[in-house]
Length: 265
Image 1: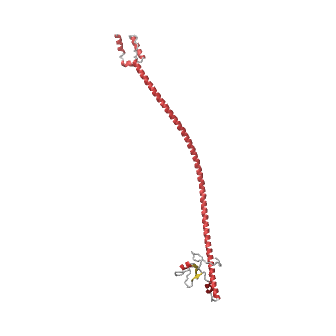
Image 2: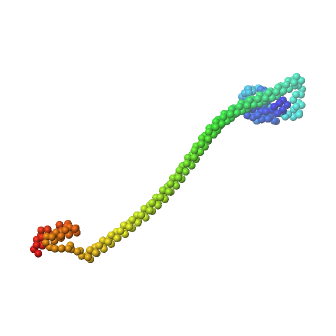
Image 3: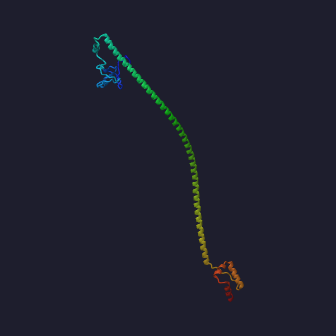
């Protein structure tokens, strides 16, 4: 706000609104809007909200009309000596200058506070950026390591897949060989069983035929060439050659009895 600016601001810290119509002016050179002046100055003790000064005098607080009428302007200083008019005007100008100075100080304070906050924010932003850069660098390194691990896993997976395919092919070959050998063994076993059955049938038929032949054809007795000692020896020799020795040892009478029987006859 400059001297030529015809608008004052409320000195209440939380208001800072432009004044219009009516305003509350204090002896400590502060001005407040009609709303806050009515609230703060209606209770006692009366204290200035801006500087906490006590306002106990009758004219320490005045409610002023900021846009007076022409009749008021024509009559307010009428009849006063020039020195009084100049004194009143100088005090009014001093109040205005003080308000301008206070507004400039307030704006400088606000600017410095904003600059300090801005510096703090910039510092915090720099720290956050640095931390984010560190985190980003760490994440990039982690991503690179993960990519390497993924490439290694892919390579291992391809190797394992190739080995698995080779094992599958070997397994299929072995399975085919096993199936062929099993079929061959089954065929050979079936053939052997069939052959054994045929041979068993042939043996059985041969045995049956041999039995029938033995029952049908009587066995020939060994020839008796002559009687006497020579004939006895020839008879025994013939039995030994035919394998009848064992039979006659258990089932026929002794040789002496045979000789007695031959001599009697």
